[in-house]
Length: 95
Image 1: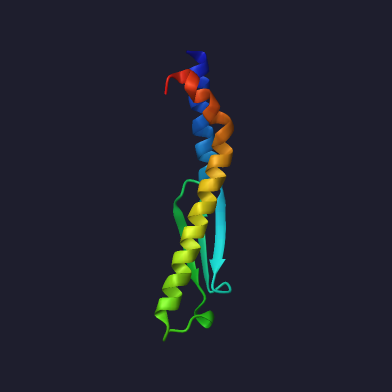
Image 2: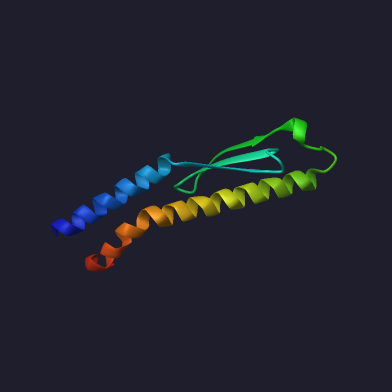
């Protein structure tokens, strides 16, 4: 019982730590910068108007898509890395 409670507390602590981790990814030669936290929440999108051609919005859309996708993937990788040591103990909890 104590081991289960300890494991749950460790998982919650790791999740809280992940929420404080910020992953920043850019696309389009820094025209678009995206920040995502380790909890997979989009925190900020910055677009540099000096680097954007308003006559080519599709290019901007692509850069936003690429930056968000890459940031989410990096956040997922970070979460998997941080949680991996803790996940081994879940089998003992009957989950």
